[in-house]
Length: 173
Length: 282
Image (tube, rainbow over all chains, first blue to last red; front, side):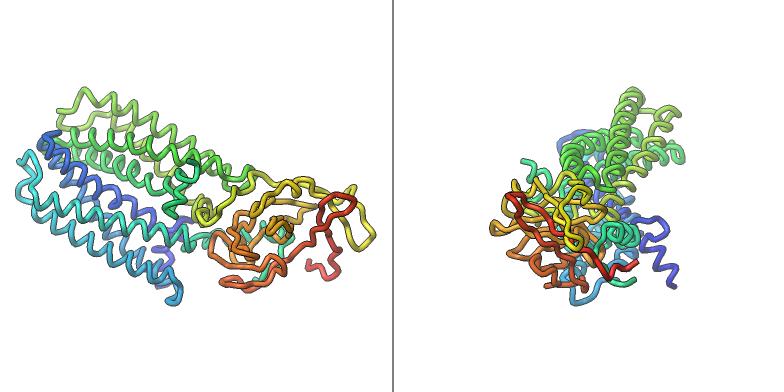
């Protein structure tokens, strides 16, 4: 069990796993919105409609992979820390965005092979989903850049060495 | 302008926000190439791959600008600077390779499956991009680059000032080491100083100079890049706070107080008093 958790935290890689995986849906789904809009302006035709469809599929696949890694990172934050609450919002928004894009995919399943532009409702879902996703990603970034979640978690020893060499007062190991 | 590109108004660095797009779009392009190999009967794959790549290159160029600004703001002797240089060089190579890739495939958009030269370029491109993205992540998660940076309102030290007790006036117990640059410090500005391996931050607050150890006692983050709130310095990484006059922890997660240094003026020179450490831990 512990080795599975360590795997999901990215210890084997020396880099937290969640922010790596999060890049894929974070680009695929706003990308789908861009492709939807381009198709509305008659750019790219059916290739653009298909491109948007594939972007949503790949995004969903990556989101499902990213979810357990995020959950593990979040479970490591103490409940009384402000980052815990942000993590909760981040997770809820991600779930919402994922559901919206899953619905979005279902709605375009029948038409994407031939359509030369994306319908109104899937387009709207792409726009709403993207907005939610961007807000969520911003919160995810805030957890790192404001509260230092996962920062110096794996490089702790290296920094301790530097601090010791620099004559600092330190806690006992 | 620099603050804007560093994302200070957003309280979030811009470069790591924008890099999602080149990474995602270039991965999308590569996946579509692979799909075209497996299912050549599916129409429009290579056209889609081309559009994704084009968008990826545009997004990469947009991300480069705040990236350069972030790079230039890393202290010259920061252990992350070397990684940052490699990250930048790899990214420039990736953009160049994808530029060639885009140009080569632009004439074969209606092919059923991807031909070898552009596919190879995509494989190399994705490989380099993965390494570069990994290094970029290490910059944040190992080196703490850009973490908590938006909380700081004055420029951070660009270098460490190396001094020595060698020629300093000493009366056995106490050594006075002049720090010439300390006099020019503005309010809320910091110096990172190393005197015979002892690394410290010197800061001016309320026209008074204070010295304390550079490394936070929690995860050893750089206090010379911390933010100042009254007489408190806040670590940029996990927000531990210390009173700079006494070194006492005023807010966790740190539990151990900072070592402080006395700053004095002797014969018109500003300097640090180093007191010989009798109970030195070995």
